[in-house]
Image (cartoon, rainbow, N blue to C red):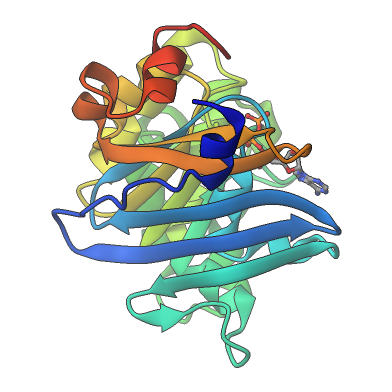
Length: 274
Ligand SMILES: Nc1ncnc2c1ncn2[C@@H]1O[C@H](COP(=O)(O)OP(=O)(O)OP(=O)(O)O)[C@@H](O)[C@H]1O
């Protein structure tokens, strides 16, 4: 693709086959004057795993974090476009981002349990939301769903920090699902884990999609092929002198990996650039 063609490139819109929970239309995302991402339409389908792949700096995390207004915490962040969650614009003036994050939870790259007991870690969001029901029951259910209950049920008072890296990440997942969100955003959740813990978290993702809608940023293309139903491939446009991320193509994971529509996707998947 020559520079002019690349500058004009906008991906063919992906036609979702299932209900769309989050319909994300990025026109432009800025950090200060820096145009970080442009022209990307990313529908997130119900009870599926949508994987975001692409080279470093192409805006995967920026787009993911835009889906629950996590980037609002960055003062220079500016979003132009719309993110419709079940038809409601989460960037509308009247919308409270804290409430958005109650429905659209997040799991980060580094397991980040709070310095408190395993139980209190999971109960944290429930208490924050002044949950009036049976907290013990909800904590147990979240730990069960995060496939951690058997390993921790006899040491719930121990510090969350006493767990292994893989257990800590599953604890963070339990914390994220305790408040029963609808969508879980995962930003490279396995990058700090060893292969065994990675496998456990991947299996967990596949179980979780029975109840939740997931979006996953991953650097690991094998991981995308193992877990993602749909894959969005982003790249970096350097034709205007900057480094602006954009969606190159999105589709069913198999099609994107085995029969990509775009040459750039082909080259990335075959390892010709990273
Ligand atoms: N807080 C910030 N302030 C300024 N620029 C930022 C900020 N966060 C990200 N960026 C820039 O936005 C662009 C996209 O970054 P982002 O982290 O979304 O990319 P990524 O594809 O997730 O990268 P990686 O795979 O390396 O994590 C990059 O050029 C990055 O330097």
